[in-house]
Length: 93
Picture 1 (cartoon, rainbow, N blue to C red):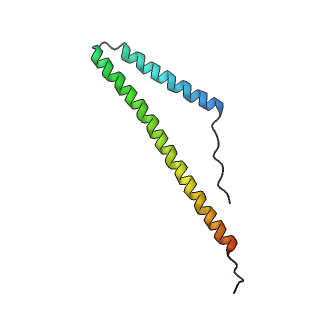
Picture 2 (picture 1 turned 120 degrees about the horizontal axis):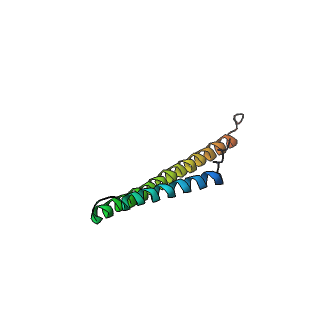
Picture 3 (picture 1 turned 90 degrees about the vertical axis):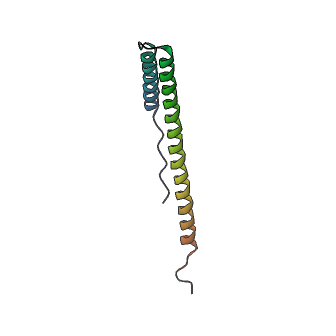
C-alpha cells in the first residue's frame, strides 16, 4: 500500500528537452536581433523574451513544489491510516 515511486526522466528525454529549449531561445534571439526595427524595440522584445523564459521556469518550479507537497501529505495520511489499522483490534472488548 505504498505510493509508487515517480519515474525519473531518461537521459535522451533530458537531452531532447535541453536542445529544444536552447534552439528555441537562440532562434527567437536571432530573429529579434535581425528585425528591421530600432534598437530600443529589439531591446524591449529581448527583455520580453527573457521575462517569458524566467516566468516559465518559475511556474514549472511552483507546479513541481505543489505536487511534491501533495505527495508528502498523502504519504503522511497513509502512514496515519496504517498505524490506526495496525493498532485496532476488533476482538478486544
